[in-house]
Amino acid sequence: MPPSSQSVQEELGERNVVDAGAEYARQNGMVLAEAGQAVRIRPNYWRIRFALPEEGSGKFLELDFDELAQRVTRERVIDINPSLLPIPRTSLPSESSPATGGSGPQ
Image 1 (cartoon, rainbow, N blue to C red):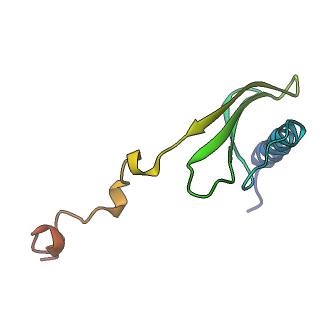
Image 2: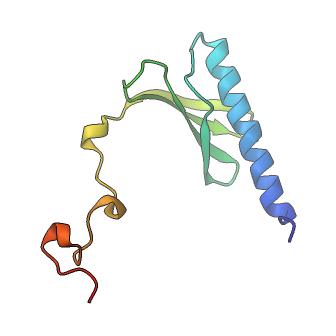
């Protein structure tokens, strides 16, 4: 089944916002490591995050973007230390795993 026009519009909106954010960064002399990701935080208002190129630095450029006004309303560099991030539950051994002292499948 083809995607709904709403999801297509959402994807196009996200792509346009990420492109606008990347252009903003370039105009302000910033080098980005990879394509950004955008999340709509309320109607017509997006938060865009780009990794910065210092390998392993955990630094990201975060932009708040007003889609109607077509402008960045906030810019900040955030430092995400990977060692402080929680371990996803899916990467932990299961309680029934022999690795955790469980007996495994019965």
